[in-house]
Structure formats: structure tokens, C-alpha cells
Image (cartoon, rainbow, N blue to C red; front, side, top):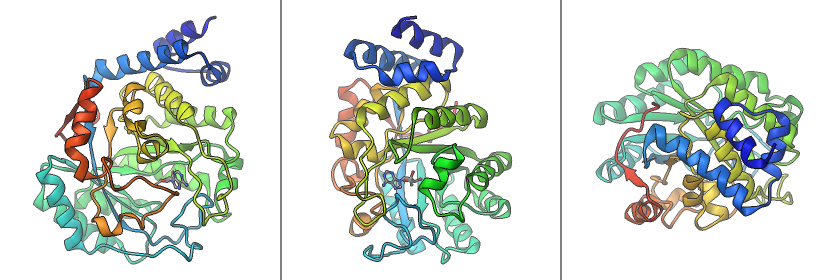
Length: 346
Ligand code: 5AD
């Protein structure tokens, strides 16, 4: 079977096997790769139209009790200057975003014990009360089902928790021993059961990743049927144990975005900041490969450079909300409309 026939089959069956994945990821002919992207784009356009949704990302704490080997805000990184945003500051961020047409706010942070359930609920309720027409997404890590339930009742409706890798051995190579894939997956199932729109995801090109582990990631996506999938290239951070590892590539990330679109057509799929960091047009290229969400930074300018998950993180140009108009133009240039809408799963 030719490359293009495999693309067609994956699209029709909305599924992929290991041999097909190997073939699609290993391709180097430009024309064939373009064909993969074109198919992914068609699938996204059929469901969501030529529209890209925007989410305002508020990175409200970079304290974290965890010590993931890849992450720049890991506990052991003593060089990171830590910060937390007050509820009022977070609300100011929402106001700024709302005025720019943002209808989804994503509260992301490390696993920070200061933010007890009570504090999280207070913040979520306040946003919900002030902006009842907006979706509230949380991305604050592993919690008990009871905690997730409380946040949901306070008004949160979506939750992002990347599974990072669906292979046990690989998971152990990326995380300290006290963290487990089983627990992480359970969190995702709990969130789904409560009624959240959930997002899983992984880094592309993380150390020790193989085609086989990627295949397991895709199988996990098929099994979980998440509403969102966040993927972006792994980028080494100098103060982590993975400082000297190689970054994931643009090519692999785009191919995987396209494949995820083909096998899970309705997914809300962001062209992530990490993708925009490794290539100046990374986000446009992501949309052209099947992505349909962009998450500009809504955090106050003075803390942005402290949320350093990885080196050279893009945070001051068009990837931030200040670049909203520019971002809209960039999307128009590739034939997409940046819409002011909650952008719910369809
Ligand atoms: N490179 C790319 N992505 C990273 N993340 C954490 N560290 C890095 C890194 N060095 C991603 C993880 C996490 C998300 C918030 O950011 O996948 O889930």
C-alpha cells in the first residue's frame, strides 16, 4: 500500500496500527507529508469549519511539589524564582482577556499546596460569577476525585491533564518513582465521569520515547476519547536532569497532530506554545496540520518569564494576548478565522 493509501485508510477507519504509524512518521517526501496534513485539515474543517478557537492561559503559580525530570518548574530547580497570583490579579487577567474576546480561561499551575481546594473553588466561583458566559478550564495536576468534584461544582467545566506517556516503563523514566501512570490515568477517568471536558496529551520527542510508546499514546487516546489533546515538542530546560537531551522536532509534532486529527476527528487540538517556540510559524503550521485551538498567554507580563517549563519559551510576542490582533491576521493569512467563542467540543 502506498503512503497516500495508508493516509486514506487511517482517515476512513479512524484508527491506526503500529506499522502504519511507523510509515506515516518515517516519511520524508514533502508531497506525501503535505497529503497527510491536507487530509487532517479537511477532517477538522468538516467538523469545525475554517475556525480556530482561542483560550486565554493564566499561569497562576509556578510552585510545584513534583519533580518531573523534564519540567523547569520542578521542585528541585532552586534557580526558578517562584510566584503566585492573587485572586484579584487572576480576575484582572480575565477582564483583560474578556475585553479581547476570550471566552475560555485556562488556569494552569504547578501542584502547589498553597492553593487548597477552598482557594481554588473561591477563584473558580469568582470567575464563574463574573463571566457566566465563559468556560473555565483547570490544569492543576493530580487531585482526588472529591476535589475534582468540588471544582466542578464551583463552575469549572474543563480539565487538562496530560498523561505524558501511556507506557509504564517510559513513564518511570520521565518521573520520580512516587508518581505513577496508573494514578494519572485514573485522574483522567475520574474527571470524565464527573462530567468535565477532559484533555490528555504528551510531549513529542521526550527522552526515551519510541514509535511503540507513541503508538500506546494513540491507543490511549482512542480508549479515553478525550475532548482535547495537548501535544507539543519536548524542549530541554537547562536546570533539569534532561538539560542535555535533544528537543522534539517540528516535523514529528506536525505529523502527530495530523494523525491525532485523523483517528479522533472531533478533538479540540491546540497548536501549543512549545510548537510556536521551536519554529516562528509553528502555530500556523500546526493549524495547517489539523490543530484548531490556540492558547495565548494571559498572565501578567512580569511573571511570564518565570513560568519556564522549558528554555526560550515564547511569551512576549504574538503568542501573548498583546499579539491578539497579529494572531488574528496570522490566522487569516492561512485562511482561518480566530473566533471569539467558548469553542466547545462538537
Ligand atoms: N518541554 C516541553 N513541554 C514541557 N512540559 C513540561 N516540561 C516541558 C518541556 N521541557 C509540558 C508537560 C506538561 C505541560 C504543562 O507542559 O507535558 O504537562
